[in-house]
Image 1 (tube, rainbow, N blue to C red):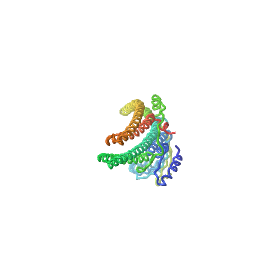
Image 2: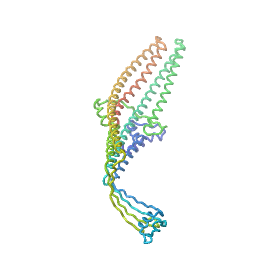
Image 3: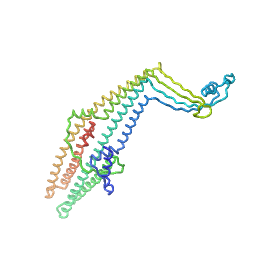
Image 4: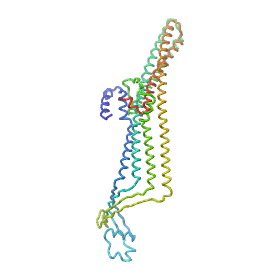
Length: 446
């Protein structure tokens, strides 16, 4: 999403902030905000940028290196003095005297040099660049995977707020019904048709439902704070949801989802790039057996008294071939190590592919399980509502005890909360399938 879309979204949220009201977002808005503001996404973006810069830097080894150097030295060593005077063009006939050659006076030298070095043949440069490119690609997939993870986290946080609001609404309804039971028990007591123990039980039951309401209210506050944190807000910020998430039809079959996971899971593709990087490392280790060929050229000025001076100048150019014949078996062991690391990465990748397929199949089974639980919870609520209605009627006619009434009410309370839990679990189970397949953002956002 382009940055201006986020700006428009923030402007849309601004009135509620200015008016002191709690800001709220729809699901898509929350995901957009998170992908732009969440620190985990930003951190992964910087890691990706760093790896890309590293890949770009590896290309520089193909180009010549130009170095400017200014050095000062002073000495009375015969060979150093001899070379300094030659470089400066100050060598005279007297300098050939034996006494001057053996015990010359100290002298100084300012050397100004511009040196160019150009690689002509070095296999290690190519393999090093390939390793850097594979690492940049791996970090790119890691960044995309982080976006998927953050999107799923926002979705789960959004559902948590939705669940907490539904639980709070059910708890408030429980409190209202408990108050009605207390009112009826108190009325029966005044009329002489009820027991004092019934009134005490009803009052205790009301206190218990009020305690659950307090817990539900705190759970809602915390869920809103977690949602705000997930979209990139501060630790004390609070963010409400504007609309509820509803269940969507699951369109893909199991084999298609497994295939999608193999093609789209960013961590799996990143692991594949890790194997490719390890393969390039094998080539880099192998390149140490080959020679390197570099060309170099330099222009130099020397002066006795001042830096950047010009008593004399000169140039040099040449080619250097370097071939290491024996290194104490270091290259042999280094190549064996690189091959072992490549084979290990390949084995880990193969196991990871199997685990990804298993994760997808497990998430599909868990969604089916959540669907059955949701169906049972709906039937349980209908049964609990009917049971509570019948016991209420019997209690009103003096055919049921307060204990039976409160037992029926407790069952109804549990059924209400259970249905909310099962609805949330089913929605989250669907999202987990898409997340396991690496297509959460594609499937869950327009």
